[in-house]
Image 1: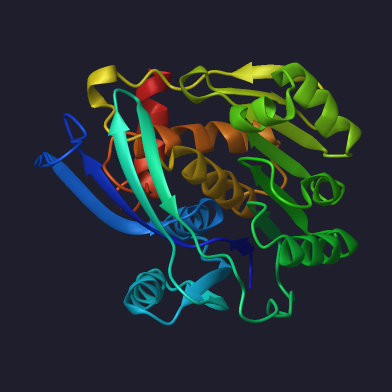
Image 2: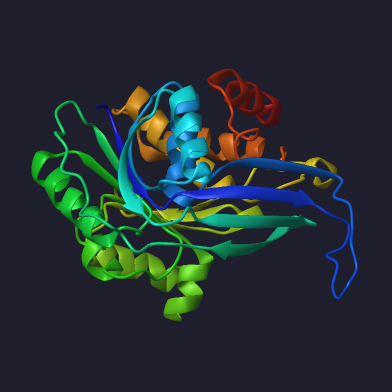
Length: 295
């Protein structure tokens, strides 16, 4: 095991529609995609596509959607350690003018305790706050062993405040700031106070507001992808997280400014593709975008 990701599994159905019907109306989507979903789950697939295949503790149901998910994971050679639930979770994603509306149906009633794994060889842990008991257990264990711990703070979930005490890299969404009634600057101070070595707030098209290993605060602008090329922003943050973990695994001695620049290009690739799987870049895709925008 070189990395471990822990999160909630979804099957994402992405529909590109000009309008959402209501009442007794119907419409035909211009395009669609069906893929794996969930914050840490999508990040794990992104990391695997970039050449660093992680292990994944994820919710899995014994139904046809669960079997489809396991087939997807096998295709990427991701070893799934299932946390069993009764039904698979679904997300219906509706991209619209650079934003996206999402309808979710989730089963997070775990039928069994989380699996206990051997962390030999593990160099990074990435969490999304779901499976709070497993997240806290492995964050503590990794902290004891000097393994990098990373958190995608998409929203207020369970034991978030306690969990942050064991996180090295905490990158949260603006939604979390809104839920906690904090400005991005106040969120930075909160993450520092919780002991996170590196932290930041993702701000969509405005990029990343963050502080580095020395505590210096700065902004990393998003790459200026032309509006006409943006088709689906859903999953861009998840790809960003998976990509900076891949970059860290490739070059752990580099500072996180370099890892975040790499991840920014990976996220830029995602938003030009429909669905999570189509939006996973290769190393060559990321390198091409970094050269293109540097020029």
